[in-house]
Length: 388
Ligand SMILES: Cc1cc2nc3c(=O)[nH]c(=O)nc-3n(C[C@H](O)[C@H](O)[C@H](O)COP(=O)(O)OP(=O)(O)OC[C@H]3O[C@@H](n4cnc5c(N)ncnc54)[C@H](O)[C@@H]3O)c2cc1C
Image (cartoon, rainbow, N blue to C red; front, side):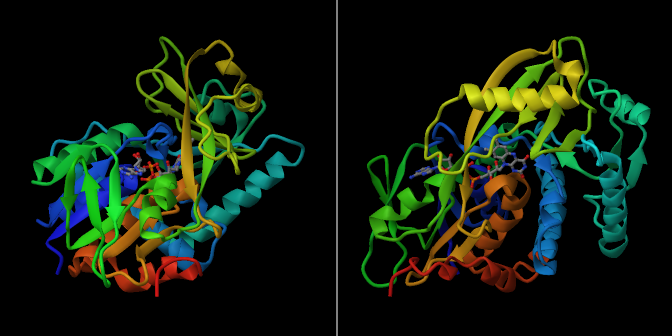
């Protein structure tokens, strides 16, 4: 059993892995460079079942395990007085502008209700079709002719606050958290790599690389490759001075865009999905224009909002769009937790806990079938990964 683990990368994935380990008394060092464009710091913060809908039964079960774990984690953090993370179950209002919008909404409501009857998923909760007046009552800036479907169980959180809370909790539980770049160092045989950090060489029993979109770069010194790519997301923060936005639902369903609100007066408009962006850390005129155009079509009541800031984050995206989790072939004690794409704030806490459990070899019945779930997302599915 590993008693010393180094985690490289302190976004939601790395911080969640470190937290899980520290909570169980395993010695953990979390090293985080906090690059510009860290996805966790830009993430909108919707914690939702929605990404599960398009996938297989296995994928849906994984999603459900992740969202259930999420609720437990939020409660666990609160026992350490870490409850300032912007978490709240606010529900979701789905709108579908366009000619056949009403028809599509009622179909969606049926599908969600059927799914709910089958899965009893707390992330869905109650599903209700709303008239335009009812929808506008929930989300006042909404275009007056739009009705919607309300899904009561969806939550949101503030990725930055969540991550900071996890870092503080790791330290409080006896772990070490440091800022700066870490460099992996090859070792002979199958032994875990060393980690060079600030003039020190660490030789842990296991290394978890959770370096987000920078994971290929982090693994390069070992001549390993994980084929993930950065996908740029630009996301706009608006303020509505004098309006309490704390209880506004997530607004979703118009193209691939959405809005999420946070107290005291913030409405966040997301987000671009820019494949092939590389690490181009810029706000672009076209990105902002596109997001604002669509947002004001569905919520014209936001026209007078203050544009406070635009954030940019790089989602780590794998070739098949699924996370990349677990042991790297050819090494003992080298694991990865990445590839969370557009759903990392939802999926990474659970997934990183699975990887952490595998890294230290602890039994973790509360996480379900650890080996079986990790097998679905193994880095070994990419031919170029690992060494012989
Ligand atoms: C605009 C936008 C909106 C999103 N909205 C949502 C949402 O609503 N719901 C949802 O579930 N998900 C959302 N996501 C996705 C989610 O934010 C990401 O999937 C998730 O944050 C990825 O977390 P991560 O820890 O893997 O990577 P990151 O958060 O990018 O963290 C990686 C960390 O590793 C560090 N690192 C890299 N290399 C090294 C090194 N060599 N040494 C030390 N540190 C290193 C980096 O500096 C960084 O801090 C959104 C993403 C974006 C960009």
